[in-house]
Image (cartoon, rainbow, N blue to C red; front, side, top):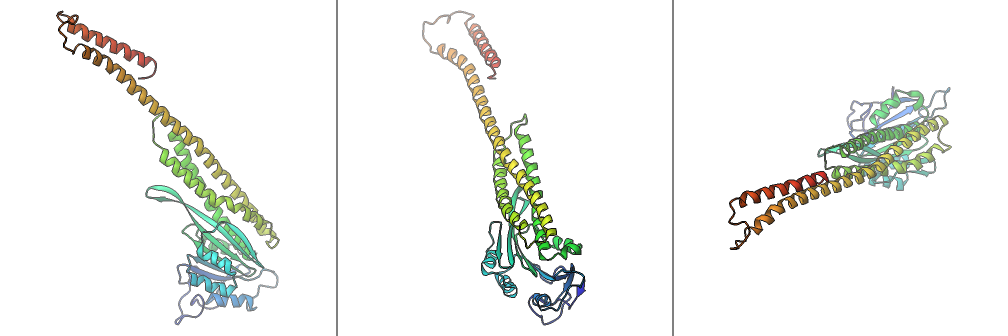
Length: 359
């Protein structure tokens, strides 16, 4: 790694020089560097980095055609920070507005020689003891000599992406599109992790629904259905922009091959998410059917026991009317006979309901 000058501040000189961390430039949300022939060059500010690349102060070795470029990364930036970067790099106003406001669908837009790529990030996190899909966004401004990544949310961190690329100078030497591929690959890998976690939860709820024990999984199934739909909204719209990016002539052939691999991974995620979504429908229907059948069984049991209890109640009610002239009232064996008749009749009814599956 080549150090031009010790790091000071983002846009210009600070009053006192400070020691520069090559990964975190004294800011929790912003990191920048110049890359020439795949190697990192440290500068005082982003403005210095741009001058080194655009004013001819920094050149690649003669035996390579690798151009130098600036990579600036932001995480939940304030509008003033992003607007200042827009002035330095000449970013389109509409794209900057989208990056500030976030809440964009995955898309790929071209402004002259710059590409604006929006990706949805996803994470599967536990909220109040329930796993939920949370989404964020990454906006990538990719020009011929710069890359600006703007990340909203806490998912798909890019520090590891930067370290991995810096460990592979040959790929980083391919230019800004290597960063574009690495970011897309990181996001899609996040989709894979989330989709596998959702698939595991779907398998668990399916096993629970079809287990011999009666369970109440309605709320969990509806929750998984909602989370699957949210994941589909993040994954599905990315296929078109990614395919368009793969067909761009401005993308080097080597990067195009990497992007096709990312596209294949995205197709796998889409198939997995669609399978989960389709599987949840019959699981919900089966569960609701089981609930209905269970309710019917409960009602049959209640009805059967009600019929059994109705017989002694009817006999006791008839002989409790206190008429002066009723058969067997003066007979010494009338009471045990009535009890025996009641018990025999109840046993007969119980065996009948039992044989028919009502009890």
